Length: 338
Image (cartoon, rainbow, N blue to C red; front, side, top):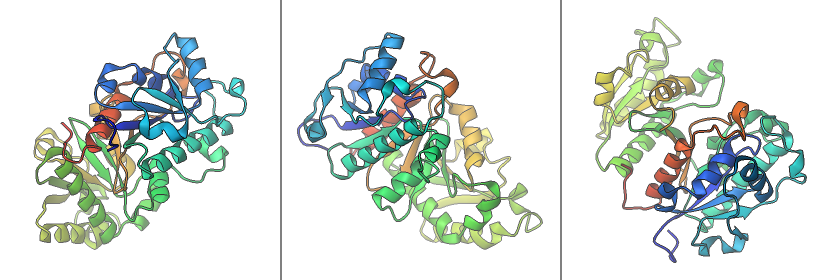
């Protein structure tokens, strides 16, 4: 944590400027739940934030700081990255290569600032994958960008909420590609990262449940290509040999029943929707995305750009507030997330 203040400095990237990110980022700068726990610094285009603020009658006149002032800032501020040549051309709710390019620039700057210890953690707003692709950015999502740009040797997506926590062996890939990306080592890496996360946030040894890939967890090879026998069960056995309390592989359709949730700290899922669907059903407004395995702290909202309600004052900022709260807690080495 930076030495000049007791509160961590959290970079808040606005995500895609044509989505709801600018609105919820502005709200965060004035939200006492945020400013009482950290010094929020919004990474984005000040011109876009002013447009959104004026349109929605939100306060947008915060101090504009230069990059060399990041580590000495003590008040809620905006780092103006001037990434959009013609801000007046940006239309809310429309996919645009310019907004995709800008969103990527905000991410890159946040990584640079965190890696150089100018800020203590990053909470990211939602990006639009189609806009990123239109801008020539080949990464499928935040997790992959942060993992590569920070040089992380292993990383995993984690969605966490008071009701449910899930981690993912694979994320932004098509279903037909999932089996080919499974291996004993990759599953074991995600189990280890999951265990470390629970120790940091809950201060105890984790209770882990691992899901199968196939219906009925493969039913002894009847379904699938014996992924459970070849990859998942060996990873679980290795985790048990390390002393971890771990169950599985469980059939995905019964794994999230209340009795199992009561006795599980983290569910290790094989693919994106296996965990995203139950988690968003249970905790859409409270869930936080955390990238595990990075040399920096990065959290995020668990929702998308919501182009259909962009700049309309309808976006619920609670997921961002929770992402900032978790980022601030993880930035404190001795504190856990409650």
